[in-house]
Image (cartoon, rainbow, N blue to C red; front, side):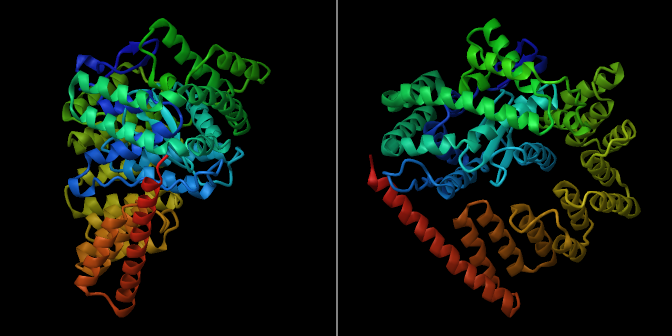
Length: 535
């Protein structure tokens, strides 16, 4: 998955600078070609475990309720989404980057607060993939490819895509699609299993066999699915447009972005961006968006500094090799020298992130300082990077202490930022201030106990202090929140065997073991019933 220049954006054959990446896997191709609905969603559930160790490759199929129901309940939909996300988080291309994740969720919730789904829980996440795409999963989970963020020219364009996906969820398109396809569930699962086996065979013939299996399994319902998908896309456009405008973004953002995609598709037939392959775009949809935006008052909305920073960051993080990071460092250095970046601060920021990746901490710190000096705008991303690079470049304990103090001040300025607070706690741990790290973690408000990162940080501190029961208990809770209950149970059993906690801690561990055992048994029984029910 590299890049081919296409009407102002890149798609998916060769990478910048002529380097060639490996072609997209058959499974990735399968996913990107599927429409909104059960086939796409189950592809994630079934395909993701292939990258896991053998002991973790069990396929957990979601329970879909009674076959006679016309639509899934919100609770069922959320449960399906959580099970899919448990698989996605294992994928190496799931980008668990705190800065990028915090930005995309902040932007997403700006939109959600003005949508019909404002009372629903959402979670936005990023997939490392240069192809432009975004997708909605059951239960309020919305994924965005890094390539789409990099190709958005304004924050309103990116917000337009998110608003469209939020529209799918607020109108319950996925729940209705899943409900309508319950009776063909076994056929679809069988087709996908065959596709995965074919894809595992490798080579172009494997890819062809995989595609044939997919389309063979869904042929009978394909036309109905496509018709529903087109209707859903039009409705998501209209609902998303209203959300976009009400949230204070430029209403032309959705029209401009989709129009640019459509124009590129016409100029380069056969190489349409992934977003158009999974979100069929018609002349009617473009015209409808143009009609809706025609009467809008002109609204000049300056893009916030974090929009440029996150694009610079993702440009680096989209790479996975030392050579790729070096190339990005050269790219940002040219941007700085030629003053070619729309944001000088973002160019220095990108250079600092790339310099850290190639282990040049002194250069990274200099660039982070320059980025902070280049703008007076408030930005947790800039301030956190300054503390991070200062610690990395420190030569002695006194310099490291100053870096920790910088991180503490950043956390105090942004008390609700997971990025700022988690980084402060991380530096306390790295400075061997473990008790202080635990105290800060328990007292702060940014990272709740419903977040896996809370227990990851807690477990790290307890491990350093040699408190085994508390360490395994914390890691077990982290796995439980990630939906990997078997691993959570294993950690709790290790905590019980360590037996170095007080009476209250050990009683809590015993109770949690019984609870997890009951949950696992119930889920296994539900899975057996689901598979046994058949079409």
